[in-house]
Length: 296
Image 1 (cartoon, rainbow, N blue to C red):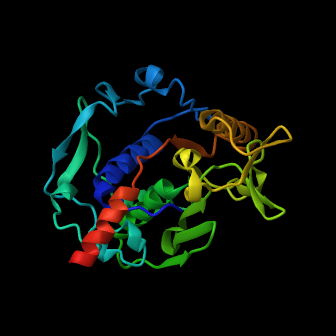
Image 2 (image 1 turned 90 degrees about the vertical axis):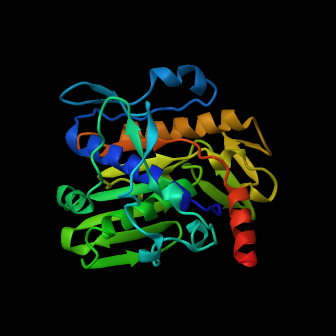
């Protein structure tokens, strides 16, 4: 997991989960896996913007602006200390301002419902939600837990942290929210002491994903890493080992393996599949936060 300082994105996360909650509970979507080609992402972006059909109109969810809302944030990181990893907590690391927490996303021609943690638990009773990917997914896993917990602070919960699998359960509602660490989605094996990224193998990771009711995948950031941050020593594709290759080619092959697995193994009549792509690099923000913490 890459070190990150994502507390400044909590309102973005809240808006994302409001969209997620609305789409999940109020619309009927035939979910299928998307192979996200980074090569033509920008060319096709405007043709792939998610649309939400409301009673009045069709809402382009990502066409809008950030508006100030004094009722935000939906939770305080200080009230969720056992959930948020220390390196994700900008306030703890010394960020002096908090005005950035007072904004929410407002689409141009529709209203997003305010996230309601209790309603979420009631609607999702008996269901399991799993985030799969890198630190972007981990941060959103932690944020969703805190958002829900703030609505039901006295309900009984259980938590188990592990590598690669961490689980949080709201026992009274039988709702499980989990995170599975898989920065590349596809498998990494150790062969003669070397880490091998298997571009056409995914079963080692994917066996843990099969029974989830909602799957939120993300990957992208780690495919570009080199040097000490690179998470593998060799790539393997079609039986051939490579010391390196075009990273976009490798990403596309890995996503192709993931998409084929989703199509072959996920029953989309019972499981909703979402995919998020790459996050901005965030190491400089972590370094700045660490410097501030020493100064303060």
